Length: 152
Length: 142
Image 1 (cartoon, rainbow over the protein chains, first blue to last red):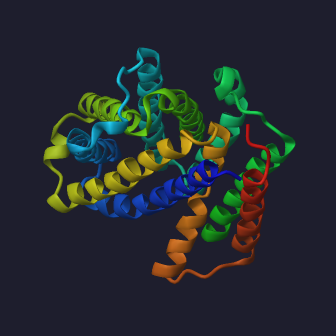
Image 2 (cartoon, rainbow over the protein chains, first blue to last red):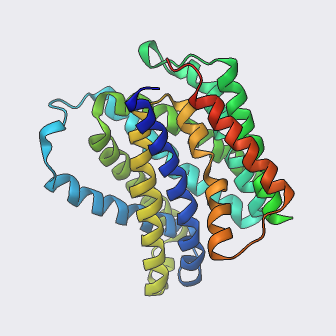
């Protein structure tokens, strides 16, 4: 495995760690702000504000000279989809058991496996091997069992 | 309805993983994350204003707002930043699979901080997840 790939897996693992920590604060936050929609909005505004401040003050040596409109559109779609996804998950949590919601939301890996080859073109298209498919299903099954085990 | 919302969330997260891969490959991680945060913040504030109005926010306690702010720092600043850094190096399927490790870390944090016990289901789950990560990380990367 190349160095950049190792970094990619490390960053993916750190993403999962961050997403495991945030619900601890959300649970406490809901006691003082009983609105998951506003809670999500507050979190995003604070994150965007802090990041924006850093972004303006950073060393710009690696910034792209020209921002591609097509790439920016994809990134905006990414932000909208992620933000709406969290809203949907929070709305689901209002009416359905946490274990069911979290287990179903983890199904994103399966949908990525299905949609990825359709939406990605050229060099960005992934080669999906049986090994990758096995890995995704093993992680999903493991995730489901951990959620079940913690609520049993 | 909750199940439909959950499946909807999974589909939206998948679309996000794919879109981010398309975006950051050309924009770079820093600019990509800035655009993503701006789009997400604007949309959710508009939805919150339309659905619940400003009263729900004004009635909140300071600690409630601060805890959500902290959650935002971890989930959006840390989580989205690392997700974009990962997506610039790996394909969306691999990124999506790695982010599915979240329940594993949640169980580990609960084990440390809440002293929750680990039962057989959790142990089998951890073994399956480890096998899955091994299969993906040692598989072909195009």
